Length: 415
Image 1 (cartoon, one colour):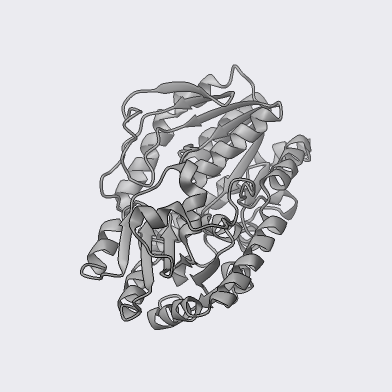
Image 2: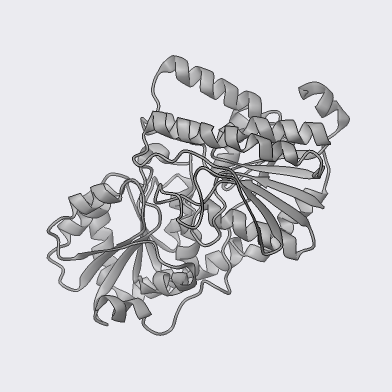
């Protein structure tokens, strides 16, 4: 089968959607499919194009038997609402010639990931011109999140953008997303139930697993064996509500054997560093090499997963799968009735978003109870094995790719 993957992030050595897209492409190629990718040079989460690539020139490479074309784009140093839109639009325009080039190849499936929604019209066009299935995968409801988080504002703008989003989504043969609540949202946007698919994030359980000995990062960072580490690892952006971690670290500064380690990069890192200035119980790390990812996750005694209330059920944090697979307890901020809250409740503690005191007390409680931490971590590992096995999920995805369920009436209705 010829499969064309289209999206702005394809960075297998990183985390987040770029990693998932890369792992999926490699898995499909190994399974015997002919896979091509149209994407941008790696720039996320640093908001700076990797020095091995160019922001102004087109590129081509073969990676794990996958043909990868990279289109130039504009990357703002300090992204804001309008700058983000221009950034995404620059990729949508520059990638258009590369997508049109694939018309001669005639793919069987055109799979595009949101964000950005800007790429959806081109994906639809290529699919219709070649007779391929058009598949939209929603990793993040960027439109809803942008208005909920205040990145975009205005009633008229919201009606126009959400209307356009609904119109586009209803024209894809398949719309998949990563949680049940996000599937419900797709239905609310007018996508027919038989065209909505559950396609969750996954984890390679052979690569991410509980380590039996102390993490090598303890020696690297000079952390003693009896120090409890509360770890945040991932993008430092605006949807996570990272400021609650700074306040928790301040509230727990009287706990001598508790250390906060914040690992990652992103637009919110400078603010987090400013909020924790002067605290001796906080350490920062830049994004670490992918080959040390399991050791990094194993550094944690407690994983931290903050999220803002106004982003609830608009996104399902991709970092959760690694946290659970590492066999460590999680403290998350989420509503108890949200899908994130329900997922974490059996393998960690959940506190209300924005309640720094409750978040800090949950961390303190686990720091003082190693037996409870271990039990929760083991429960998390079992949950990951049951729900997020990479091979099971991608085998199901491959089956859906091969199952052509769209009738000719659909094309007459929506073309």
